[in-house]
Length: 77
Image (cartoon, rainbow, N blue to C red; front, top):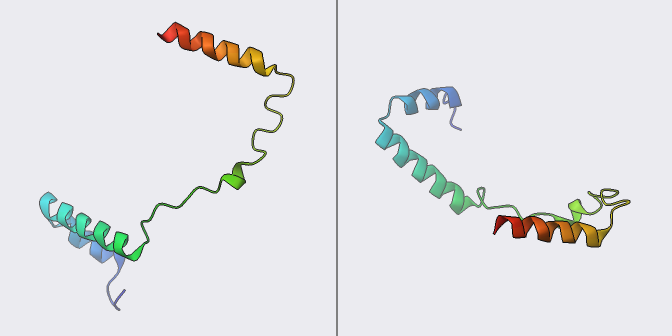
């Protein structure tokens, strides 16, 4: 940021804009961020989820669980 310009000053100036001008500024900033790649959606790291539910199903019968889900779904129809 150029010397002498702070985020607080910018925010105060933005508050002086009309809602229409604020929206136009927002669109320009979003477009600029998309061009730089900053606003790109980060891909999920599925490996980080490995083992997250460990022990969650301990002592549970998988078939009973599936049957219960199917029954619940039939109740919704």
